[in-house]
Amino acid sequence: MANETYNVDDVFGVVREVPLNYVPREKVDQAFVEALSRTNHIVVYGGSKQGKTCLRKHCLQDDDYIVVQCSNRWSAADINANILKRAGYEITQSTQITATGRQKLLAKFTAGIFGASAEAGGESESENSNSATKTPLELDPEDVNDIIEALRGIAFQKFIVLEDFHYLSPETQRDFAIELKAFHENSDLCMVIVGVWLEENRLIVYNGDLTGRVIPIDADHWAREELRAVIEAGEELLRIALPEGFKDKLLDNSFDSVSIIQECCRRAIRSAGVFQTQEQLTEIEFDGDVRVLIKEVVDEQGGRYNAFIMNFAEGFQDTRLEMPKWLLWPILTAPIADLERGFLYADIRRSLQSAHPEGQNLNPGNITQTLQSAASLQVAKNVKPIVLDYDATTRKMSIVDRGFLIWLDNQDRDDLLELAGLPKCGS
Image (cartoon, rainbow, N blue to C red):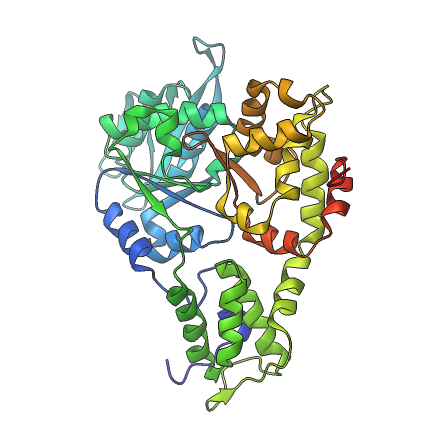
C-alpha cells in the first residue's frame, strides 16, 4: 500500500463505492457481521448519507446478496415480484386472476447447468443428463408462500437487501412487515432492510410478531474518534497531514455528519494544490474559516432545502387547516439544539396550538395524521433524501438530514417562514 497512488477524489468526498478511507465501527460493523451469521432479518437504519449502504457493501461480498431498490409506487406484491426478478426469474403476466383481482405472475427461471440451459418451474416436461425443462410457475405475487416456494425451488440462499425502504408508503411497509414473519418462519431467507429513520423498532411497530426476529443496526451513530479515524485513514493514503486545528473545528461543527466531513476534507486538500498521493509526507495548509467551508458545502444543497420547504408546505392537496404547512412552524422557529434532539409529540402540539389559527381548538388527530404522513409526503414531492421523519413508537419527529441543520442555522428564519407561507415570528 505504501507505493500505491490514489486520487484525492477517490479517498475523500462522497463516492458511489466504498470510500478508500472507510473505517469499520465496532458497534456497527461488528454488530452487522454478527447479525449476518444468524437467521434473523436485519434492519439497517440511520440518517441520510451516514454510511448505511457503505456498511452493506463493505461487509458483504457481491455474490452474497441481491439488491432490490424500493420505489414509492410499489405494493408488497411489487416487492415480491422484484425479489423474484433479482433472484433470476423471468416474470410475465398470467391470464389468471388472484382472489383480490390482481393478475397472477408466470415465473420462469433460466440458469446454465453443465453449460446447458435449464428452466425451473412447475411440473417437468422433459429431462436429460444435462438439463431439465419445466413449465413456468404460476403464482400470486401477494401470497408470500408462493414467493418462498419459488425461491426454494431454485435453492436460493443469498441475502435479500431492500434499499430505500422508507420510500415505500406506510401501508406497503406495514404489509411487508407482516410478510417478514412468514419469511422468517417458513424459510431460511434473510432480509436486510435499509431505511432512513432514527428509531430501531420501526418494523416492530408495524408487526409486533417481529419482536426477536429482527436485529436493528444503528448506522447513524458516529463517535468522535471514529470520525477522526476516517480523516486519518485518508491522510495516510494520500501521505499528507491536515492541521490539527482544522480537524478539531471540523469535528466540532459538522453535527457528526461523515459525508460533510469527507467533502470538507476533499475541498481543503484540493485548495492546497494536492490532488493525489504525495511522494513524501506533506503538511496541508488551510488558512480559511472551517465554519465557512462547512457552510459552502451545505449551501450547495440550499436549492433542495428551499424546495423541500415549499413543496412540503403545499401538502398533498389544499385543505382548510393546511396542516403540512403548519408542521413546519416548530421546525423553522426552534433553536438548532432542539432540532438536533428532535420534537416529542407534546412539544409539537403545544407549538402548533400557540401559532395555528385554530389555536387550542386544533384537533390532535389532525396533527397525528400529518406527522404519520410526513415521510410519504416528502416521497410524493420527490424530496430525496428525505429531511423529516416521525417515529410513531416514541411519538417523536426528527431531522434525518444533518446538512439541513447546518443550513438552517445559517438562514434568516423569517425568510424561510415567508417561503412556507407562514407568519413571521412575533407577528
